[in-house]
Image (cartoon, rainbow, N blue to C red; front, side, top):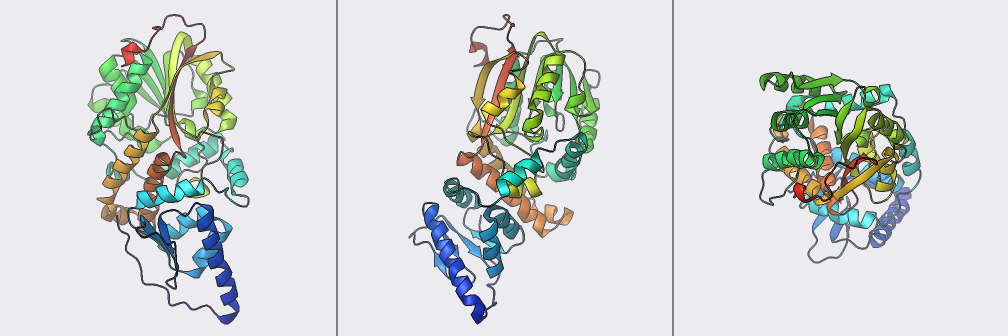
Length: 409
């Protein structure tokens, strides 16, 4: 995709600022060296080009001196803000440029106080904060998500067992893959924590004959899910409940959570583990599906501030807090990282065909902000900065499960 480049600034620095601007340009040169001289060019407002690759993947164009000054203070946050404001544009394929930049940035520690500050911010997962954050992202309107998600509104990683699969087919394959790993049997009771628009709960009831109690805090999503259940004649087998995971009660044979752990916060993992331990039967089993990291560190500050307040992607070591205290055994761990990269790329392609409608719903800044979010999500999975973990577990005393995973494949 090619970004339209606005006219270059005619802003001329005054004499006292020239030395400062020269130092800033020197800083950009130094940073470019530190991140391994990626195959991109950085173009400054006065036409200065940094990067001498004969065939660059693309170019990052900075249109105002003030953007560079902000980048010096907090590069990742300011990059996102400048992109959303159209003060910084990308020429070339946005995902490819971001992959190239991200591979270099992972070698450079984020300066100043952002990691500590945002990790502290993301740890405040009170009931009120959780509800507020859900509204910030998920309740901006079902009509918006219908523009670029699949027909079932599945907003988590798809599963491309067939590389030529459409997004619809890959999302249905993911729902089946989760059910297969859970080894669902007709008549079983399932609890789902964080059910989105209800696609998995309805799929489990429709195709596997189970009854489901699905918990969520998003009123928009729940309203849509309840209508679907009623239209499909599944209201007697699927109950959609507006409540926090911490309030889940009752008993179930299967516990599943797809795409919710990112919003729980590490300080609450043991609490979620206690919930699973409380509701699962003696031979109960479960699956946790979550974006993750290879090492513990917070998400980038721009995403946390503008897209997913309070979000955190755990390492596998951190995820063990869900299981250890309750005596759960890990049965399987799978990493679907490249599946999520492909999912985000498919989402972005659909989003780009609907930007005029998105602009009518919101504004130009919102269009660019979500373009960056979807593209950078794909790029971070491609570059290995983010992972996608599916963890299957059961009680450590459960001896009734098959001794191999042959039935899965």
